[in-house]
Image (tube, rainbow over all chains, first blue to last red; front, side):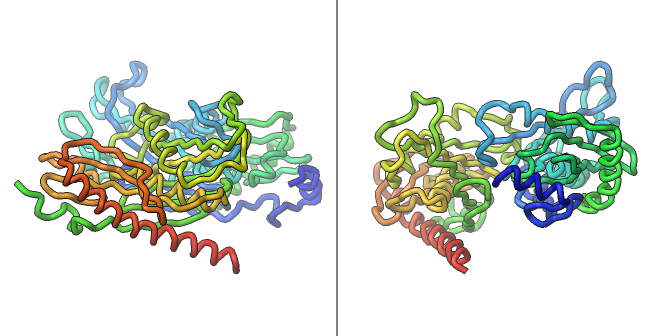
Length: 253
Length: 234
């Protein structure tokens, strides 16, 4: 696909797949996709597919937060999902993705970290949120957040004996998601702002801003891309993200 | 003691329910999912494409490179993401299992990358991976002489069984696990490993059982290919 063609279409408010600039591709969420994970979900956004698994383990708290549990977010962008991904330890793209998901959940206090404390100063829950790209059709960030929230929202707490997790056995208690911070990434191509690019559009973006919103409030931001953004563009992007919170939020149940 | 009845109620010569589907990863040149009971494998093929590092290139034919990976939440205790000694060995035996059916002579200096990802594990993951890879290679249009089907056979307590699940592998009276692969028409063996303790007669019996099982797997694979290409034709 010719990048000039994509850019000239977008200049006229059009896209290669016929969508409007502020229109996401079809979203499908499926929960409980894994029998061995405490919580799991798949998010499809058009061709893009991401799976997320939540595993829980017991660990020791950090000394500066003795009564709080922790979350650990990792993202694996393995070469199975795109010809552009390479084998090896997580690169910058995977690390950035994991950290954006992490901050959205952490900063909005989507989980009550105090409730993840088992015994103050001694034992806490560590919640591992593992993101795997299955097919990178573009905009992995937004899809990863929806999948992570959907997985967390249906996470069964595992059985514990003598402060050890009994792997493969669950209680009937669930982890509770206090808030659902929805992330929308706004991208700019040729001066126009759009959401949810497919991978061909994503290849020609010049700037992007990921915005995590809960109840109209901003909980995390990440600016990406090689070019600058104006304040006016940032305002427009935040307005889009606030509008998208309601639209995308209904997929997290 | 005798293993009179299988834990999940199957007959000793019965494979778990199988499912196969092509084109599960649109960005790949070929892809497939293969499910055997609770074990789910995805495979994607990229290539033939340029081989890097270059010293691995073969000027006579393309190189097959397999990469097997279990995702962190595929098992009950979280597996740290990334390769292990186990996965390195599985990469090797998977390559050897698939190579005999491929003809890569048209693609010198290139690589055909096969990525296998185990989404959910309940024993038999390398075999499910090979079944998925065989389909993904066909989907990618790589010249093939045959298909490959793989299944694990073995001995649980005193019984020869096919397609052991995790609980059987962990049987208190011991279990012998024998992953094997057969070519479709040629009926040749391209994967054979064993961990455990069996007599020669038991091994032969197990391989015979595996051969029959591979026939059933091939039926599922052929149906998946037909279903996909029928859809394509429309």
